Structures are given as C-alpha cells and as structure tokens.
Length: 625
Image (cartoon, rainbow, N blue to C red):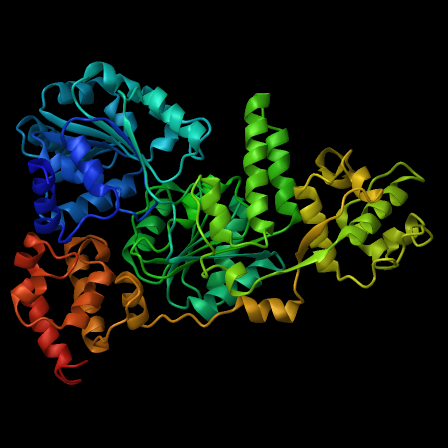
C-alpha cells in the first residue's frame, strides 16, 4: 500500500467511518490524489462521492466540485460538515454576505471542499476566486450532462473545458452513473481530460428488484403496489406529462398516500418546498417528471415507479438508480403500453435534430423495448446493454415468475391479415383497438359503420384476449413487423418485413401475457421490510438479531437532531448504521468505533448519547433485543 493509499484509508476510517474501500474506490482515489485525470462510471449509490471527497482531503488546497443541482450541494455539504469536513457551496441560494464569507474562506485556505454550480463557476468573479486559491482538484459530477447523447444534456457543461486551459496542472475527475461508449468518448473530448484513466465499475445494483408489466389502469396498479408493498415508504413516481404528475399526486393523496407533485410548471417556491419535504421527511412519495431526481442524495428511497415509458435504457437506469442508495432492498416498478411506444417514436420523428440523432435515439428506444418484452432475466439484459456479462439474478420478475413463451406465428398472421383487409376496401387504416375488436368479433358501432363484420378476419381471434392482442401488437412493433403511423392518427400499418411472416418464411415466438389473476398473483410479493431483513442486505445478505426498540429509539433521536440542525436525517446517520447499532448493542465508545458510518467526529459528537439510548431502549426487552 502506497503512502497516498494509506493516507486515504485513514481518512475513510476516521472521517467517514468505513473500514474498507469498495470495488475500485482505492485505485480511483490514489490515481486522482497523485495528480491523474479520470473518468469514473459507477452506479448510483456505489460510492462515487468518496472518489473525489477523499482526494480533496489528501491533496493540499480546496477540491472544487461542479454539481448541477442545488439540492445535491446542500445535502452533501450538510453531510460533510456532520463528519467534520470544512465544506461549503456557492450557488443562487447564497446571500451576498454568505457568498463573500465563503470566498474569504477559499482565499484563506480554510475550506477542504467547495461545491459550485456550473453557471456560477464560469463567471469571471468565480474564476478569479479560483485563480487566487490553492486548488486540490476539480470534480465534474453528473458528467453525462456534457454529452448530446446523454439523457440530461446541459449546455452550460460545454464551457467546462476552460478548466483544462486555465488550470492545466490541477487534476480533474468526471463522474457519472450511466454512459455508453459514445457518451464516454464525448465526455473525455468535451472536458478535454488529459489521457484520463477510465474506471468502469459494475453497473449491477443487486438490491434493486426490476419489475415491468402491461399498463392496465396505471394509477390503480400503482396504488395497489404502494399499499401492498411500500406503505409508509419514501418513493418516486415518474410520469411523462405535467398534467399526469398533478393528477397522479392528487389521486394518491385522495387514497391516503402522502404524495407531492414536482415539475417545471410548478412555482419555484412550491418546487423547492416539495423537494425539501421529500428529502427531509420519511414516507413521502414524490410524483414528478424527469425534471426531478438528478443528484437527489436521499438514501432511503424504497421504490421508483414509472407510469410511462422512459426514452432509453440510460434514462431508465439513472432514474431507477435513485432507489436503494443505502444498499437495502428497493423496487424498480414500471407499467407501459403501446401508447407509450407511439408517444416516444412520435417525439423522435418530430424532433428538429439531425438524422444521426434520430437514428441513435430510435436504437436506444428499441433497446429499452427489448428490455420490457424480454422473457429472459431483466438484469442480464440491462447489464449487457452496458457491456457487462452476468448470470440470471433471481431477483427480477422474470426470474421469480418466468414468463411463458409461445409460437405466435399464426396469431401474427391473423393480425396482419386483419390490418390488410380492414384497410383494403376504403384505403383507410385503423388503430389497434379497432383491429382487436374485429379480430375478436366485437360488433362495435365503428366495426358496423365500416362493414368490418363482413371481412374474413372478423372473429378469427376470439380465442385470444384483448390484453394478449395488445401484447402481440406491442411486440410486433418492437420487432418492426408493424409500425404505428402517428401522422395518420396512430393507425397500424404493415412493413416490408411483414411479408415474411404472412408467407410463413419467418416464425415468431413471443412473450405470452398471463391471465389477469395469474399476473396479479405472480406480480405480488410480501416484501420482508423487517429491520432484520434490511440489515441482512446491508451486511452482505446475513441477517442478524437486533433490538427493534433500540432501532426505533435511535430513529426518533436522529429525527430530532436533524430537525435541530436543519438537515436531512440521513446526513446524521443512515438507517444501515442505526440498524448495525441496534444489532451490536454497544456498551462502550470502542464498541461504537467499529460500526460502519461512525467516524471520529460523529463518535465525539454523538457517541455518549448513542450509548445512553442503547442502554435505555434495550433494557425493557433485555440485552438480547
């Protein structure tokens, strides 16, 4: 172990309270601390922050962290100060007096880490401040924002290349949770990183359970999911439109769920208030557009739900990665339908971007649809997208309740023939619901209006449910054997590839949608939310006895401390730390010293009080808990 690595390990233990590095952390920290540039891809909750925080403490000077979100800066600074680190932020929330005081601290070398918004960093005033300071490093968080192929492109990030020109001897580390090869290359080029080492950690988040199913009254499905599996938990619900956000939040509130809405149309003060409540309080569900979430540091989000299809696997991975940052069990739950596919394709087609952008966006959407419709392990397919090989996880819906595959060649032929015969007499094409009505022999007003009860395909698909037909259509669209013509009111049309299926040259095996009762029965699970189960996941899968009264007493004490300090509860201690204390039942400060997440500053500040709570709360139940 080098002197730098040993120094870093000592900071890890004494400041942050962790006994060892995870994965590539030690290698990344040593490389940056010795002056090297780096690009780090590490999943949300994988420990990215330590990869620049510790080098900032190892090196002389102040570490400057470029962060796109005010909430992230505030939370990380609060957590660092709780750990005894001299940290501050400069953004639009600072008063003039506060900003001046922080600038004086920077010039005097009295700060270890400074968080700065990219817009503020690029001002002449801020650059002049940095010119006058001793700089340890630059960290560019959420670095995918620099790439037009990324999922959160932000033009202000493009100006960050000036750091390489102005401060050539200061190491820079760019970090993100998601970036395919194209995005990685663009990050390196646009930030002008100097021969950076690229560190790619495993993208796997084994504590997250992935579940995707057909949309069928999405809000009722969501309510059932929350009530049965996440009552009282914090969660995020993503919707595509602002109206849907407001309506879904109101629906949840009317049904007893503490839900808030967040989107760009909300008044600024309301958005800030809702975000603050979500971060600081337990059991709040945030319903939001994708305007919410990047940089959210709340570790105890127990689920992320999608009521609409994201635009790519990168977006899906980034958004679902906001669940379970503490390593405890969490759910990524999504429902989607054909309308979602149509909507996303329409956005791509109507974009004013160039053909190359449209081509890549279409490929990304197709990859996501493949993930939705696969009959294989979802985690295997998700990781394969990022170039990582894996084996079936045993913790996604397809592994837990394997879907049935069926020979759908004949059904596809019936469907294609029906589309052709309905369009042929009048030249008018029809949407999915009308085609399904004809196939199932439904004499609706529209079917009778066009005389489609007389076509040869009327009623030939009555043995297949409407839901299953929708699934077939969705999969055929994904395979480009059908297309949805959104310029003509979302009608179904055959493609050139349809001919091979119609003539029997191509056979199809598709995912069979289970019957509704079976689907609901298989889709549900009784989640083990007990502290033993949660602590087991946090400690590598080994459940251990604990004291529930101690755990609850510690949480109540933490809530009061957080309120007194004006910070989120998890910046004081994570649940996983309190669970470990309630398991160990420490009697001395030395016993506490070995608990993960309790560094020297927190031990001095809170140690005696923790021991008092353990003694008091454990006494009625006995020392064994």
